[in-house]
Image (cartoon, rainbow, N blue to C red):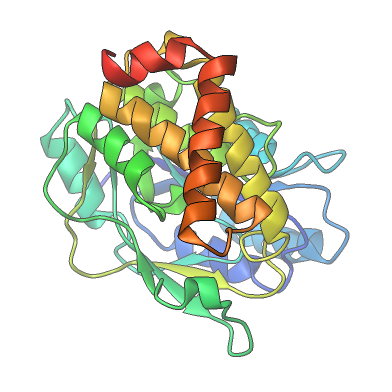
Length: 305
């Protein structure tokens, strides 16, 4: 099979894990190149990557940011550099298993109208790290029935957890170029908004691959698990951004309502849930009233579209 995929790996202080991530991508026969964007690491990340480069030639591309820009900006740099027809994303502390792209590439080859596909991810927890909030999240992702673009965006917004992760995505570069790429002002929410944009503008379908081929390592030092409060703050701001620009999108009323409820949900997460049901309802309706006063156009969008 002709190699057509660019795998983009943003890395920050990832010396412990990045070699496994890189090698797990390089062994996939469909991979044209692995692009590592070092986000101004202060550990031995550079030494680890540079050690691998003479063995791989042009298949391993390495760029160091002059200053720390965040994962969104690093992924954007990788997207612009990519030579592949298809893009895949991998975090520096995660890794692929053999055969990661075999099913997805077959799907995209047989169905040229499809812009991208997604699969499930296995969470692997470090022995001494497992927050109570994540007790039941061993596998994330969706492999159910294929959904329309409108349904997929709605279900992603209506779900309480991740519908699929950016590392579960295989997408045409031409489809990604239809979006504004990742919002670099978000340290944590840029990948989620990127998925929203892709779902809105492109046709994405589940791979329905029974065997999981992506391992997501969770530990006390990675971005996903650290600074949880800031992560939720960024996701709340992301929802606020979409609400501010909701008139720019042709969204169904149910999707608009899901956005509003996500806004309320993240407010609860950040500020803390009231202890009583009455307290929760009072705050919920107070927030909804505040939103309608600040953004009166929301009422029409949430009822008539």
